[in-house]
Image (cartoon, one colour):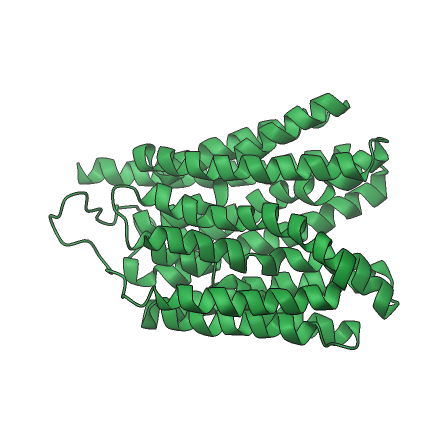
Length: 390
């Protein structure tokens, strides 16, 4: 029941990551600014989202999930209501970053960390299912919002979203008031003790941050630029949007499948498999640029990358104390968000320099290799510790 409520919360609250993208053209036209200025609200949202993952993650380690999440959900709903009343792009940007971005973060890293306390044998599936809500939000909200905007405008749409968030998320969070069991009872069926590893918590955290940053620099290349890539190839915006939808839908499948796999072979091996497959799928984008081929490659890419980010939370729970889960997961998630932001910009910069996305794909593969090296090192350290214990 808790997992079902968590998934529903994530699907509703995930609108905070996608709404600004949908209203960008209408907001830009009303405020009369250029595309760079109109893109700043999205950047502010991601910064707030990244910071919120750490701040709220630390808060849930101290007081449990529901109180920080309740405050964040109120901030999210209020943010949408206030954004609908803004009179300048600067005001809109501040509201997106401070209220919507931070408010949305409660339904990602902190939510994943919280749900991990409630499962032992099927922790991987539970974490992946909770994380899948953000992808479901990306599939649902961008389809619903244009219909409302067409008849009522973006301001009414934002206000309506704010009301929906307040009316639905607050009662759902109140159902999660029961405190999480911080550790499995010793000797209980399916209990999972922290696994040994010959790395200090700080060193392991740094390694996971490097891995998370590098994998998401690579991941951002198709996700951010697939529409523009299709336009360059002459296939149009609609085809690119279709491919992005395919990535998101395949990502949901990938997240759930990765959860099942992580429960059997562990988070490190599962993440390593996903990283290798992501690198191979990025490589496929270079020679196969036909329309049918790009649909297939986008599907393969979505199936490869969807389960990577939740694996970081699984690894944290496998090798770090439960009492630190919120903060530790939040820091890694923040690194992945910054990786998406840096990678999206870097790919565009490389395109401007070379006039082609081929070099940008190669850049993504190079960053992906850094992620693979980090995971191989982590796996080696874990095996050494397990052998020493044996």
